Length: 187
Length: 187
DNA sequence: GTCTATAAAGCGATAGAC
DNA sequence: GTCTATCGCTTTATAGAC
Image 1 (tube, helix red, strand yellow):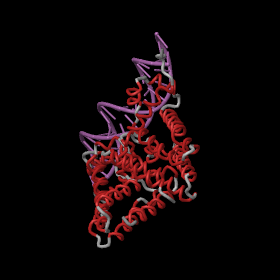
Image 2 (spheres, rainbow over the protein chains, first blue to last red):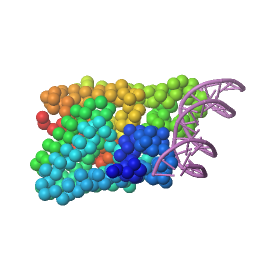
Image 3 (cartoon, rainbow over the protein chains, first blue to last red):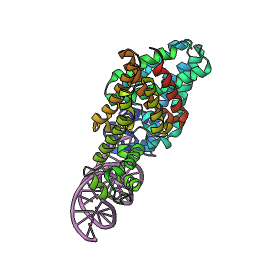
Image 4 (cartoon, protein in one colour):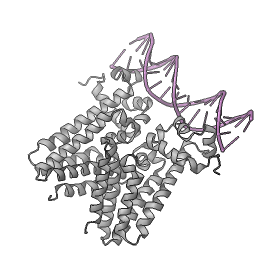
């Protein structure tokens, strides 16, 4: 029997969606209580630091998810080419083919970036580095691998922007398809 | 002798920077009055519709700038390859090698997108289409041209996100360099 | 055209009952 | 752990003097 009492980790997904949709400044407590179904009292019980602590917890959860499902497999996978393809499949699912925005990207563009600069920088740097490592194991020289990895991480973020701007998920899926070819092309 | 009385168009650049740095929700009237040097009275005299009208005016001004300096040259330039290189140079200058964020991209990711969806969609669609036209004139078949144009517009947006996240303008300049090769490579 | 004063609403955060 | 009531501040927008 599931307990009816909420845990901190239970509300992180809902919290993440609010921050994704409204940004840090736009994510009012009113939006948060509405989406999580919890009153302000409960929220401040779980997150005494208020919105800042909520956002930090969401960033940490996202980071953990990518570490497990994206970065680690890239670093340690036996077949590097298959690892790259898996990454693209995970990314397509996570961002729902461009319908879902990247919270870290949204934070990066805003003034909140400075408040969470370590988390924001770490998320993208570790993604780029893990991908470069996989490409290196696939036979590319380090400079080429690093350049292609940077290009891929940036293309995914740009595809999210453009897909939402043009209201067309095709932008995102086409970008991932191009990336698969470009990443795995001979050096 | 310049008149000391402000005109609407005089304050649009300052207004644009406030929206760029803080987003639509974060751009408070307090920020706007501080940056423009105008009181609320003057602001509402120029923009009776408040923040919404200010943002719309800024979007229109940006659109005009890109139409003149980017889209039109791409569509009508004699040398299409030179046109592409000019575009990249204009983009590098406009976004200050990644130090300046794209207001339309910021709006696209936020909930404001719905309020300004026509302007946001038009900005990116016309950029993509003008670039595809130039690439077509350079000898690429229409499908390839359109794919590469979409890829380039998205890469510029992603490069802005990643450059700011990693606090490294090199990300942006490297992305533009890769784009020059990729756009003009043989079909 | 520019300003100050002000209204009305929303904000993040806290206190304290249960 | 969850709630409601409330504080103090900021917000957008308006009114009206100059």
